[in-house]
Image (cartoon, rainbow, N blue to C red; front, top):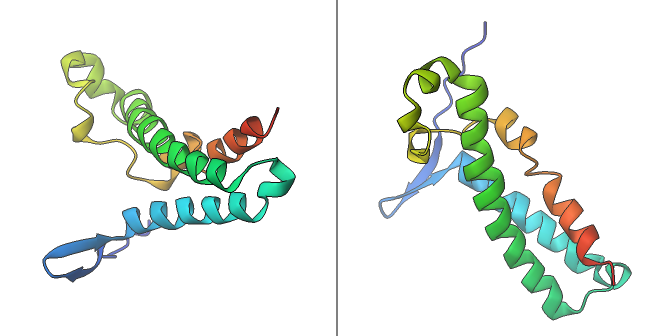
Length: 123
């Protein structure tokens, strides 16, 4: 079994940590915004709609896909034995969920924005 020893913090600037996980999400959201901005005419969107959609995607994907979806996978698949014994801990999202690539992929972080962009282009 391979166990990595990668530091989750890329660097620290002025006491603020830059994390790999957050950087990955930031780059993903930026890439989605650039894609929509580049293809806005074929999607039938105005520049203002592109920025509004990007804001909705960031908030929607972050809240639904990462926090709620990550928590759901954490509870149901990763730690069901614990949470079935202590159901009062289920809503405590700060305890975990969403911290691995399988969770974020399963919850649609990569596919959800593409679907939303396609849905918003329909007149």
